[in-house]
Amino acid sequence: MRIAIDARMIKSGSMHGIARYVFQLLACFREQATAHQIYALVNKDNPLLELSWPSHIQLICISSPWIGLREQWQIPLFIWKYRIDLFHAPSFIAPLYCPCALVMTIHDLNHIVLRQFYTPFHQFYYHIFVKRCIRRSAFVLTVSQFSKKEILATMGISDTKIFVTYNGVETRYQPIQDVRQLEYVRDLYELPEKFLLCLSNNKPHKNVKTLVQAYCLSDIEIPLVLACEVDTELIRIAASQGKKHLLYFVKFIEEIHLPAVYSLAELFVYPSTYEGFGLPPLEALACGVPVAVSNSTSLPEVVGDAGFFLPDSSNPSLVAQALENFLQQAPQRRLQLKSQVQKVSEKFSWKKMTQETLHLYEREIVS
Image (cartoon, rainbow, N blue to C red; front, side, top):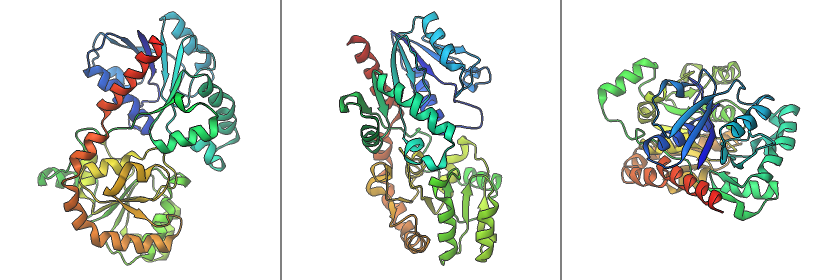
C-alpha cells in the first residue's frame, strides 16, 4: 500500500498540537518496520528534511504552503503521480478532489463551535471545504470521545465512520529529579524559585485572561508564569491589583526543556474552555506535576481523576478560591501522582496511536 501523509504544518520553532501529532505519527512509522510505502508531503524549509529516514518513508517537497489555494490542485497531482492508495489529511486541510481513499483527522471543531473568534474567510473555508471533505472521507479520526460527539452532532455522518485514537505523551515527559538539570533550566528561562505555570497560547478560548484575573484576586503570593506572548492587557490587570511583579512571561520554551519546566512548577493550570484533547495537562501529569483544568469539553476525559477541576473557569472569583485550595493540596497530590505516572504514559501512547491508525489504513484498503 502507498500511503501519503500531509506534514506541511510542521515548522521549526512551532510544534503546535496538529504538528506534534503528525511528527509523532511519522516518528513511530520511522521506528516500526512496515511493508507499506509512506510519503510525507513537506515544504522546503520543513525540519523533517534534516532527519534521516528509512527506505519505506520518503519526503516529497511541494511548493504549496499549508492552507492555500494551490494545494487544491498540487495534492491531487502528487497523488496521481505517485499512485497513492490512501491520503491522510491530519487536520482540516484536504483537497476537495482526491483521486484515492481520503482519511482525515479532525482534532476539534473550534472553527464552528467558536465561530465568533474567526474571520468570515475561516468560517467560509470550514463550511464549504472542510464539511465536504469530511463527508466524503473513507473515515475520520479524532482524538477524544468529546470530539467524536461534536463531529457526530455537527457533520451528520455515521457513527461507524469515526474512530477515536488518543494522542500520546513522549517517553521523555517524566519527573526530572536531576538538580543540576533543573537549575540549568531555571536559570535559562529566568524562572522563580516557586511558581504556578500555564503553558498556552492566548486565544480567547484558552481563557488566560480569566486566569490572571483570578490569580490577582487570590491570596497566592508565589509567581504565575505564562508561557505565551507578552500581553500588555494582562500586565495592566496584574498592575492594577499590585501583582505585576509576580507575573512572568516566557515567550518560547524549547521542547527539550519542557519536562524540566513542568517538574519545577508547584501547580500547572490550564483554564481553557474548549479543547479537543489538551496535551499540555497530560504532559504535566506525566512529569508528576499537580494539574488544575477546566471541568469541560475533553479535559475531564483526558486528565481523569488525576487532576483538580476548576468549578467555573469563566468566574474569576471561583477560580481564585479553587487555586488557593489546589495549591494547598498540591504537595500531597504530587506524592499521589508518583504511582499514576506510568498509567498515564501507558494509556496515552504515540506508539499505540500509530498502530491503531495503521490498522485503520489497512482495513480501508482491504475493504
